[in-house]
Structures are given as C-alpha cells and as structure tokens.
Image 1 (spheres, each protein chain N blue to C red):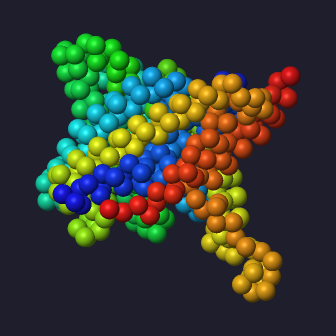
Image 2 (cartoon, rainbow over the protein chains, first blue to last red):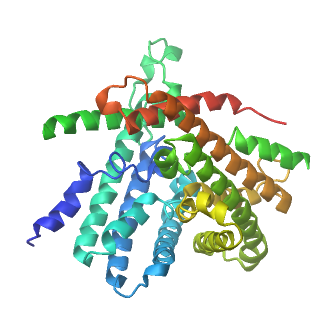
Length: 210
Length: 202
C-alpha cells in the first residue's frame, strides 16, 4: 500500500518530534499514575491507542455533518462510548489489571490527547490520515509510559512484568548489598522521571535541528 | 458532621488531586505561568466541582445503582459535566458579566479537566465503602465536603506552582530543561513535600 507523504508524517511525527507527552504536554495525568508497574502501563498504552485511533476515524467520518456549536459534546459522547466498551472488555478478560487501573480507565475520556487530536486533526482530515494520526499519537504516548514504568518497576521493586529480575541473593536481607529504591514507587518520582525524559529528548532534538 | 470535616481536610492535603493522583495535570501545567490566571482557573474548578459532584452522586445512588446501569456511568457523568459547564457559562454570562470576563475563557476548558471527572469516578468507588472508613462518602453532605475539598486542593496546588514559577524566571536553568522540563521536576518535589500529609487524620 503506497502511503502519501502526509499520511506517513501523520504517523511518524507523534512518535518523536511531535510526541504528545513530551512536546505537546497532553495526557500527562494517566501517564504518571499508571506507571508503577509495567503491565498496567502496557495495557493503558494499548487501550489509549485503540481509542484514539477509532475515535479519530469515527469523528473524521462524521466531520461534515457535526454542527460546530455542539461538536465538543458529540466528540465526548463518541469517546465515552468507546471507553465504556474498552472498560467492559478489560473487566471481562483482565480483571486484576482493570482493578489496578481503577479510575484511570474512565479518565481516558478526559485525556487531553483524545480531545486534542479530534479537534486539531480528525475534524479537518480524511479517515485514513486520521487513523494513522491516531495510531501515531497512541504509540507515542505508549512508549513514554513503557519507559517510565520500566525504570520505576525495575528500580522500585526489582521486577519486570511481575517477574523478579534482581537476584534474591543480592538483597541485604539475604546477606547481599542491594536494596530496592522505595522512592521510585511514590507518585513524585514519576514526575521527576518524565522531567528527565523531556530533558534528554530536548537536548537530542536540539542538536539534530542545529 | 465530623466525618464530613475529616473528608474535607483529607481531600485538600492527603488525597490532593494533583500530588496524589495527577488529575487535571494538563491545564495545571499549561496555565500555571502567573498567579492571577491560575487563581482564576482554580476558582472555576472549585465552582464546577462543587456543582457536578453532588449531582453525579445523586445520579449514581438513586438512578444507576437502583436500575443496575453502572456501566453507563462514564457517558452519564461526562454528559452531566459538559451540560453543567455549558449551563454555568450561560448563567454566569447573564447575571455577572464581570465574573464571566474573569472566568470565561476557563470554563470550556474545565469540561475536559480530569480533576472534575476524576472526582466523580472516585466518588463512585467511595460510595461502595463501609461508612466507618475515613474515605467513605455516605450521604450528600459528604459528597459536598469531598467536592469542595478536592477543588480547593487543586486551587492550592496550582497557585503554589504559579508562585514558584514566577520566582524561577530569574534562575539559571540548563537550556534543554527550561520551561516544561523544570516544571515537572518542581511538581515532583512539591509532591514529595505534600506526602508528609499522607497520615493526616481528624
């Protein structure tokens, strides 16, 4: 399938240069709250990707028939319906993860990435471009979540996806030298980590543009 | 009554919307450049929260729970919030143009502020708790206390950050970290400070 340059741009841009979390500072709330462990972060990333992509397509198909004045409500209802479906599916097939994510699944509705993309892109572009834009933004959001969760779970509890990575014999309790960094499990460290990722991202991209 | 006061104080400090749950982060980071604007947005959040949360509480307890329609709560809550924001905007415009001018631009933003929706979703969880639990919302008075408290907690957080950011204008921050990067780290440190309230109980 030959994709036009614009379609490619819509997909690739949000992964790095135009990342929704790092550059546009959208969707921060859930990005920080679900990253204590890798598994909920992955589930959250995938759910958001699916919802952004589908709602972008739906709104893009309807874009010519939505009256300007009530567009926000229409967008919210479309998103809320999709989120309800995803939430019910998660409760049915991954109950423990759904419980861990608790209110944050519902909060995908008010995730600024969704409203931002619907307003800025889907309202003015065709469905294929919108689908690519939605996928791009979803993955751009998901990889930040995965990086933050990777660091927090590894350093905070010595595990990845629930499996022990740091050998038991290293721990002080077993006569070793190692201790988990409890700070990583606290909400504050998520903010500081994202701050550091932004720092790295900016200094790399500034060099490229110069 | 005692329970409501405890709920109120806890929701300002220990269960602060920003520092404990990261809700309403987007507008929190975007609007906190100066104290005056952030105070305006903060007041608007308190206002909308105080109206929407008790309404959603009544819907949850007397409509959704009674009819077993719990899975419709997302759509219902967001519709209530969007409708009330629209209504508040029209009423304020009609009766108090000066208030409208200071709150006006923020009101549409608030419909998609996660702090408002988040408070309603937390309320949904807390309704099911045992009434003895400090976090339980057992009646409409508790719902009001929780709404006002979490709104004020958000207000305190945004005004404090705006104050720090105004001071930080004069500091020598490394170039790639300027702007949003250092703001994240500042909020992180503020969250650490707020953690000392976590054991608070009345």
